[in-house]
Amino acid sequence: MSHTTSVTPSPSAPASPLVTRRNFIQIALAALGASWLGLLVQSWLFPSQTATQAAKPVEIALSELPIGGVKTITYGGSPVIVLRTTESIRAFSMICTHLGCLVQWQEGQKEFYCPCHDGRFDQFGEVIAGPPPVPLEQIAVSVQGERVTIGEVI
Image 1 (cartoon, rainbow, N blue to C red):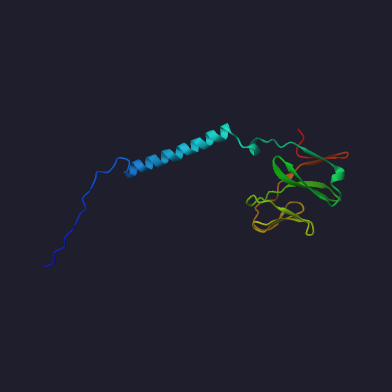
Image 2 (cartoon, rainbow, N blue to C red):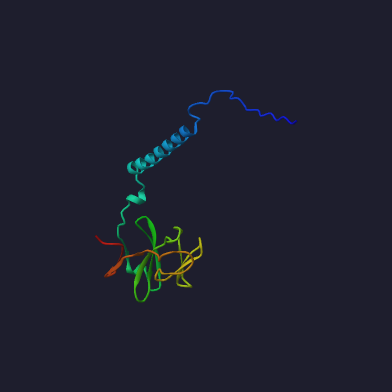
């Protein structure tokens, strides 16, 4: 006859009320809520500079931008490239619409290239290859006499 003995461990010390599963989850959720509330209060009290920096129009002399030339400027805290062709002057954000990497203007191919994931945009900012979902952001440009204004004039 075979006899199996089952040994049940006896608790060596009583469980702390903070160790129960319910209390642990309640404390974790309270800590998570407090951290979110802290982030909201921090962003309200100390807003980031890029969020508060108004996009003021940028003016450049037309002579600084020869036909076929490009000029990189900062508009609203972000890099922008201004392209001048025989037909027009256009400005585009240099931030890729896929994951926010900086695009590069490739003069030989007349296209923008994003090195992060091999995204390509044509000279009009339209997607021609890679994962970017939408075209580059185009910034308004106006020419008045010998001055080029990039951005909205309010």
